[in-house]
Length: 101
Image (cartoon, rainbow, N blue to C red; front, side, top):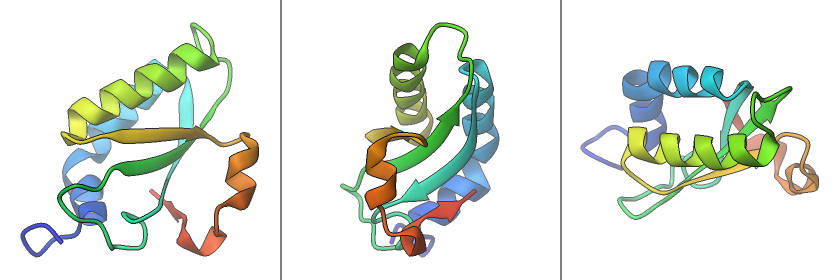
């Protein structure tokens, strides 16, 4: 926990608007968090794992994924991993540990 507020709360309360603006720039929607942040087990060294859906990105899916990862990292001040909602990997994630925000 960071200063009595977990990272998920910090993201939602302090950064959600900025994340959604970045998503809009890349044609992304349906933001979800998984991993240690979603389980509220993150610490100061934890990265943040997001799932997003990208439909018809202006400059391609690979560009959108990389751009979102970089923008989210700048917004949150920590490493971010982006998984696209239609990646095979998503089916392996425990649905109980995914938080829609």
